[in-house]
Amino acid sequence: MLGKTANGLYWMYRSFERAENTARLIETGQRIALTRLDSGQEEWRSVLQSAGSLGLFDAHRDEVTKDAAIDWLLRDRANPSSVLSAIEVARQNARLVRTALTHEVWEATNAAYMSAREMLARKVAERDLPGVLGAMRQRAALVRGMTHGTMLRNDIYNFARLGTFIERADSTARILDVKYYVLLPSASAVGTSLDNVQWETILRSVSARGGFRMEYGAGAGPREIAQFLILDTRMPRSLAFCVGKLRDNLRYLQNGMMHPGPAQMKALHIERTYLSHDIDAVFDFGLHEYIQSVLSLLTELSGQIETDFRFYE
Image 1 (cartoon, rainbow, N blue to C red):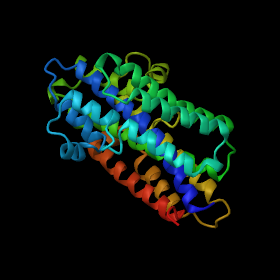
Image 2: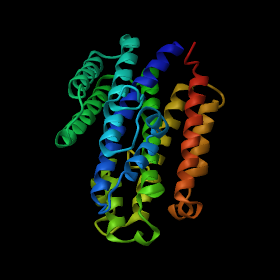
Image 3: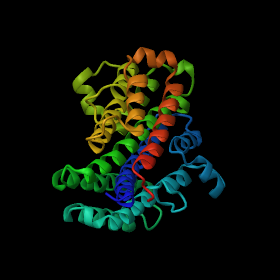
């Protein structure tokens, strides 16, 4: 496969996953703000920082407000990670690799693009926000469903999965970091009803509440939630699940090689060094420090994938 085709597939699916996850991050900010009696604008600065958009936001906007942050994350074309920008990039890449996609995947991609252009053509009113965010997530999910249902399990599929899971791992790590980096008001709130509500919000933001309740029941707390979202290999948005899929798809792509390639070795390193311990070891290390280390390694892995498969040749 040409490197340019692999690149287009990787970024098409990474961009769709980013659009969906940015929508989830907005929902997380909304829900957490509702739990704060003294809610100011710091929550939204935290959400922007977790989305990796704070520096660019400050360069384009005068002040962090709830409305400005949501508009920036949702539809501002100056933000390459906004929901609208991500869907546009996904569609541009889909056009470049049109012959590698089934008709169903292309139609779902086009529908997502047309829907985003229509719904995000103007600023979204607060009363309409839940419906718009839900629609964006559903459109991205439809592309994913058509991919699973109609695409051959070949190199094309493997590059699509690499883009999906590296973006998903990055997003889950960032959403967890929102909780521990700044959203908890003070150390005195740990273990209180406020703390528990915020952890519940984190579960909702990654569509993990139902699965978590099946596994742990209603009485589990932050330790179990962190275990579920970081180390549980059955949970499709956990770090362990995502990195395991990255390892598998890299192995499929390098089938026939005598030794694992550099990208596969990096995935194995993340798995063995950071995802093979129990959750107590993670908390002993420091959750924020742990997440920052994983995020840095995921960035390195993405760069190594681009190098190994000659994305720009």
